Length: 153
Image (cartoon, rainbow, N blue to C red; front, side, top):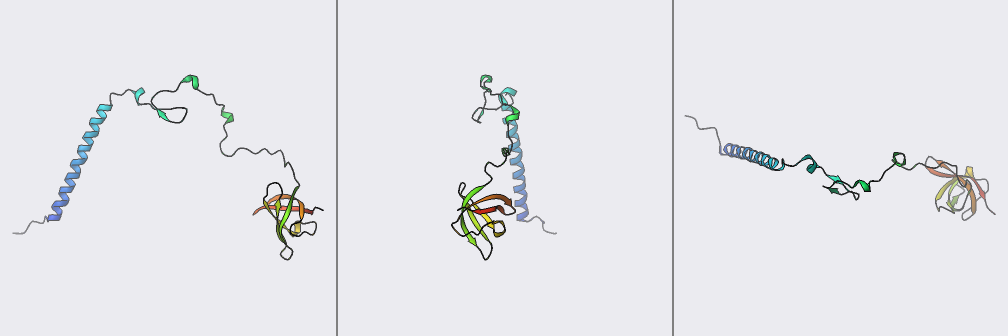
């Protein structure tokens, strides 16, 4: 006669599987009992409301505190720009760095303190470092560029 093919390991796995199945059934029964206990809530009791501070509450909001909002006043995304045109086309600044051999440099805007790239093709006079200049700004592919650069005397 042959020996039984069930090894100790197979028997242990079967025991664990049956135990898990039994625990799952017990949890299901427990949820049914809890649901039955909660089932006597009315629909109104299940509602949650948001108060003026953004917190969840079980009491409905006071209609007297309601604020009327005009849908046209709501701005989604970035606020629109007022394109009335540039206020001051000509800017003034000081040359921070300029290399005659390479033909480029940077100007520090006097008002915004931003650094603006300048190319020698956009310079009307000969400029050097620390010179006071007036210029206009246009956006290039890599950022703002100074054009119509003139030396202030």
